Length: 136
Image 1 (cartoon, rainbow, N blue to C red):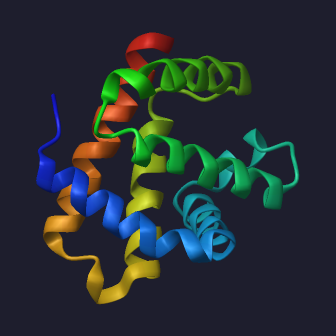
Image 2: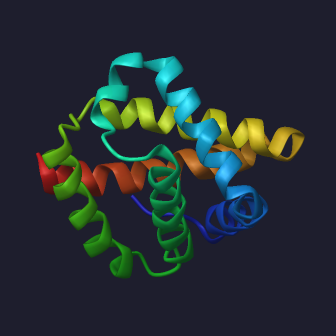
């Protein structure tokens, strides 16, 4: 699976709009994630503010690397290995993807068009597949 130039552009442009409100966006993300599955809260042992900073930093690296996926695959593999150690299961990836989409919708409002949503779905699927294939 690969991404089109248009999908990459849409993901990068929409992330650029979310990045200035990174703290708020990460708080929304975890709120949405725990609404979807409250049992996931047990996987998070650290300060949630710091967790949010790590989330947004990882997203930034991934989004900025979409033009050369070979550069982000090693990052995704290391991330997947850490997530296994935290107790993340393959089925959790879908929940995280859903929380991400809900967060983007909340943060971008009407600017989160169907085309932008589909670009994020394709991007997240690609990243999640790389992580799961490496970890499980």
